Length: 423
Image 1 (cartoon, one colour):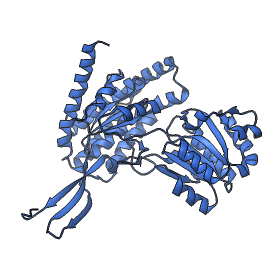
Image 2 (cartoon, helix red, strand yellow):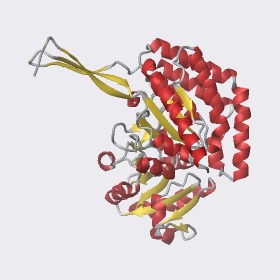
Image 3 (tube, helix red, strand yellow):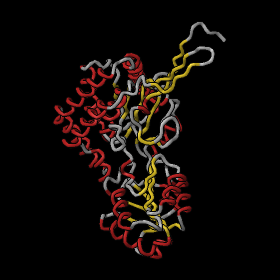
Image 4 (cartoon, helix red, strand yellow):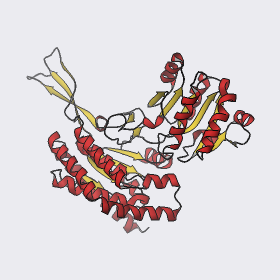
């Protein structure tokens, strides 16, 4: 790429960020009523223009097939009338949620007479970098607007046609309903260095949130001068305890692996207590095989089920995003917890057990944003948690963790009232 082209990319994206930052100042002052009106207008626009969206998505789907994208990635990319309706309903749900902006966090009166209040305020301009998931476009725009933030999005090339039309429709509807012009920006440049430009715009972008595979997230985390909220990588586990209900375990494992294998809350590894391994391993392997799941097992697994593929050390730290699973037999709950804390990504972990003490121990000692007892990890989702949608699932600890809804898109401001006090 020529130096002039590189300059043009930087200039284009910088100008978009400047416009969005300027709009964010007015957006932060809008009432809940004004923001909700825009969200409902946006939802209606998606439904009315569904045929246009589907046409653009068809182009992405055809290009994806030609590029050889896996079935699970194509499923992520696919839009249907039903999925667009779900996106519209997601915007309506966001409109019905309580607005966090202006909510009081604390208040106190100091001995010197100062009244100190702390309230929630928008972050400002939120940057989203994501891959082949068009639904992120609607979710991110909706959540950012309701929380008073402007947004600049850069989606992956696989979904460029879908994302462009969605962003265009949503922006037009939002502006017609009173949202400040420029508050919604979509970066249509597919070159990789477009992300590099965004990562350097700390003068305008207040936080950047990468959503996608491990490579994208690692690149942003290691190179961004804009503060980053790390999201998405899901190396999730189910531990089948010696006290597990085995039928329940099978039901949960099949759901957590096969319902949508490409999503970040799908499981990648099953851990089985050695006390029940001889009984349970053949049972779960048969069910997984019937579901067309490729199984990779540790040496102890192969001693019981020699037909399995051999799992390597790399398997324990791999997010397959496909119908592949690794299985390891562990000595006890302590080894299971140690394995998860060594190889997990801090996303979602589950234990299947009827033993209360083991359940409590697992939830206390496993280091993850969501820890389940006798339930599928697939519930780690903003909508399932009652947030309407999510901007991402944070796997770090500052400033948000787990599914990020409206409150996670705000920060705090202290308001101090005095009567001439000096120090």
